[in-house]
Image 1 (cartoon, rainbow, N blue to C red):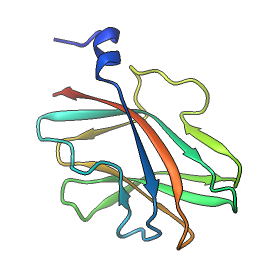
Image 2 (cartoon, rainbow, N blue to C red; image 1 turned 90 degrees about the horizontal axis):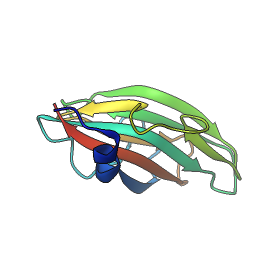
Image 3 (cartoon, rainbow, N blue to C red; image 1 turned 60 degrees about the horizontal axis):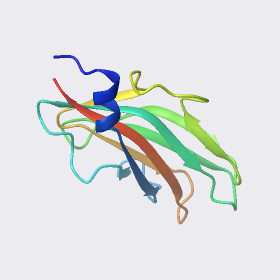
Image 4 (cartoon, rainbow, N blue to C red; image 1 turned 180 degrees about the horizontal axis):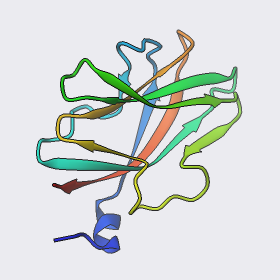
Length: 128
């Protein structure tokens, strides 16, 4: 049975994560566990806050089910005092910017070692 907008609102969550890894081969994962098999995670918004010191480059990856393969989804420059959002402007909980299937995760890395970026994601889970 398809979910209506009210059901989606009740399932919507916001997660705050500090992106601390500068290693593309070992990025910071957003979720402590991969999406459970048989589920799908809809990411409807990703927001970044600058570190107030320098411009940062952040790379967002989809971590595939094998746990070692990362597929680049977004590459974004964030000025020191900037706030950036994917998608830009308003977002719609029924239109995700990325979706994750069972066994996948979302991950990110920053360009400069020893720095970090505050990141907030809005998402909801559904069944396949």
